[in-house]
Structure formats: C-alpha cells, structure tokens
Amino acid sequence: MVTREEVEAAYSRTAGWVRHTPLAESGDQEPYHLWFKCEYMQHTGSFKARGAFNRLLTAKENGELDPAVGVVVASGGNAGLANAYAAAKLGVPATVFVPESAPANKVHKLYAIGATVVQGGAEYAEAYAAAVRFAEEKGAVYCHAYDQPEIVAGAGGVGLELLDELPDVDTILVAVGGGGLMGGIAAAAEGRAHVVGVEPETVPTLHTALAKGEPVDVAVSGIAADSLGARRIGEIGFGVARRTGVQSVLVTDEDIIQARRALWEKHRIVVEHGAAAAYAALLSGAYTPRAGETVAVILCGANTDPAHF
Image 1 (tube, rainbow, N blue to C red):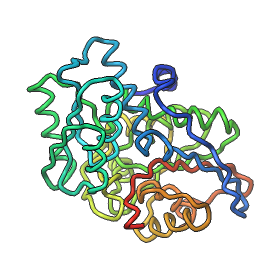
Image 2: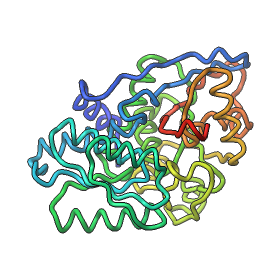
Image 3: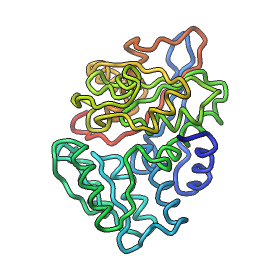
Image 4: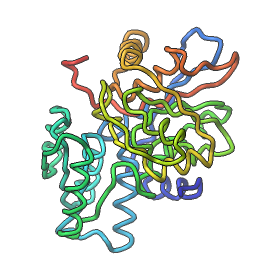
C-alpha cells in the first residue's frame, strides 16, 4: 500500500529529474471553478516519467541496477517511453515489450530514445508475461507499467504539486487504466481532496473491481485502449482507492472524442484520448460538480498521432 509519506519521499528523490508541470485555470464559464494540471508537458509526454525515475533511482540506491543489463518494461507506449528515457538518462539499457496494437508513433519514439523494442501479442497482458520472463532470465530491473510501489508513489507527485499550488481544491478528476496515477494521486490527496477515477465504458477496470470487491479481468477495447487498456486494475491502485474512497465514473468513446476535440477548440490543448477521458466526465455529466466547487482535471498524456487528431 502506498501512503502520502511514500509519495513525498518519491517526489524528493526525483527532484531535478522530472518537470514541475503547469497548473492552468480553464476560463470556462461554469458554476464551478475548473483547473487543468498540464502533466502532458512532462518528459516523454506523460506522467509516467515520474514513476520510472523513482523506480530506477530506488533500484540504483539499493544496488539492484546492473548497468550492463538495465531495465525491462511491458508497455503499450507511455510507460515504455518513460522508462526508456529514464534509463537513457541514467546510462543503462532498456528493453521494452509492446503488443502488436501499440501505436506506431509511440514505437517510433521508443527506437528514437534508444530502447530495444520487442513487439508481439495482441494485448498488454502478453507483453507483460514476456517482460517478466526476460527479467527473470537476464537479471534486468523490472518496471511495472502501473503496479509497483515505486511507480505509484512516483506518479503521486502530480498530486503533491497540485495540492501545493491549489490547496483549496475539492475534487480531482483523473483517468484510470491500471490505476497507478489514480493510486498515487489518491494517496497524496488523502484527507484533503476527493478523487474521481474516470474510465471508458469499454475498459472499466476500477469500476468493475469496486463492484466485485477485488481486481478482476475485463475485456479491453475502445478509442483509449492504447493508454487505458490494462486488463485489470493494479492491486496497489485498487487498495488505495478503497482506503481513500475514490469514486468511479464511466464515459463513452464518443464522450472522450468530444472532450479531446473541446480541449483543442476551446483551450488549444492537444492530448491523447486516454487523457481526455478525465475532462469527458465533466462535459458528459458523468461527474457534475456542485456550484462553487473547485475541480482539477489531470491531463496526463499527449502522445497522440497528429495525423489522427
């Protein structure tokens, strides 16, 4: 289980390695106050760099990071990019396993960073199994895309920055795939702000787990599956969600498409579909703030293909 203290330790450890991303007032004419946490401006275009650096720096401190073997991660894109970038900055190799469905623009970026890319399998779960075998056989440090304490605690730095700049925030809306970002933010905000996890109806990992009382597999499909396509919620994220009372809401693919378009047309912000899911909760009415409520939307990633915008 990840606590606020662990998030604070991770934030201190990664200082100087990750960006402090901007917080911007939306300017929308609404009966509530809306802010955007612009985490899509983080290194490699998503929040994942925070957890990646915390995981690798911790492994290095503990003498676990072999400079000849480096790290391995299974990722449809963003986690792979982040860990490859962190590994390059620390001077160690990175091997990234991705499913066949990984977006071509993200795979190209992995090669550009210098990672060894192994592509195969239809879903993230298959890439995950292959990466675990590689770690066991080669002795590489395994970096889970979302379900390791260091990864979750690192991601929670987004929440610490938000709370520092907007201490009166009432509600934080965050997209959920595997639950690492949600878990980190919920731990950081525990006792201070309400966290709402937003998921596509086509990949309801948190929603289903809360209904069943435990993480379970769900079918994976839809417009945001490339970044929110985990088959089940992580144990850590789920545990933090239950402990802190995270609320779960669902949005449709069309809601996400409309939210992504609105972010560009109204605010000139370009994000990937997964990141737009959090904003979609407001536009669709899946989450309706009360009058005067201060709401922050985490815009967590921008690794989208401009040709498909």
